Image 1: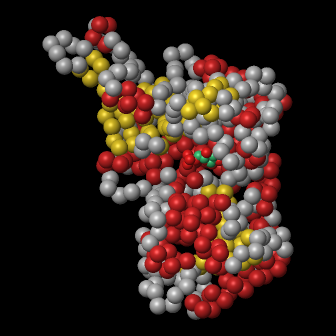
Image 2: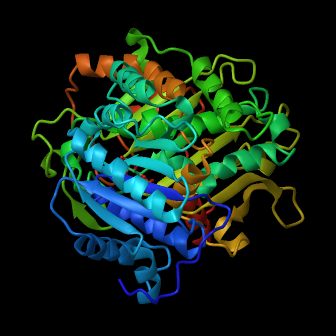
Image 3: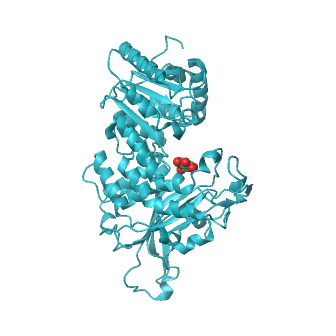
Length: 518
Ligand code: BG6
């Protein structure tokens, strides 16, 4: 790379950092990690003394790796195609190291390389070890790092691990034990990328920076809560992985549980990472255990068949690449949960997620109770609905409050209306990608948005009876929902009388725009 170029714009608040990526030639590095680091560099959010060391098995030179990563940045950077000068300044910081993840020599070379950089910088650097490898390596790399002495410095060494954290409770415990043998919990950053999303973080801001709703955020005023994470995509190119995971492991154990914790937790006393994580884990401890016998009443699974999404024909799950033709894996999962505590006793929390649903929508709907007494005559309140608050995480980021208002005219007539806050309309600032937020936090050593070992294990513990029951009894009706529908029909049976799965807000708003008051 040319030597006369201006240096990368940097952030003086950050200390020297070496970012080691195991799986540096892989998809996650190319698609997410390096574009996020590049975007951070454009926002002056990287230290001046900064290096990326990509470690992988394949033979690759620095230049070839940089070309490959440049292509990823051009496709996935939030700033669009990278300007040549900006890319060249950034690319100087990237190095490739070929190595086998299961050979001590790889780690010895890595240690030397880090030491060399530190010598050149004349200072000690933070070393962040990111496991962007297949999960089979998660239990190996920490051991080798430990043996090579690279995990020893509690202040300067960190490890980052992506989900899946285990395949079930037992394997999650085993993996956490391996991590704990080499690293202190304060050095371990378990990523759930949902926590990096702006609107997920906004749940805390909305609940605890405003006095408005918190007094009503309990069983006295809230009838039930639904959490929906609906995707239109199928398994894409990940059939091989997904067919061994399924929706419960892939989405519910992590992303939906995080949303549940944020919506149901008690107010934190401070914004300290462990304080927030304590409050979140309390929610999982309060969850009423689902007994094996009660699984049919508490959980529903589904698998998509062929169908139609937005006018396009789509294949069934069993026809996807990498999927067994008689696969029993669920691509849809729904749960009914209760939290046994003072705030939430007997309030159902309905969770659902699925692939190939008609609409991409992640949202939490808080359904308030009906008013205790209806003073208006029945004809005044035709179509009357109790208030509903929707926290919309994606694709339409915002908050919608539905309530009753008087319809204009001489008669007293009530109609449901919406009050709407849209991120896009309210703030000029573009939202960073979740990975930008999370990588920045790893550099700052702020673990607030990361999963602690006990939380991961508590989530597995809650779901184990469902996983075991589903494993023990093969589904006889798969595929049981058509691509482009809202999942299997029996998902309705989870609901208590009078409850319903809401339509995603965006649909409701679109319908209203067309004049169909729903
Ligand atoms: C991942 C799952 O964790 O989250 C995928 O493995 C899923 O199956 C994805 O598609 C959804 O994330 P997002 O950010 O697109 O909502």
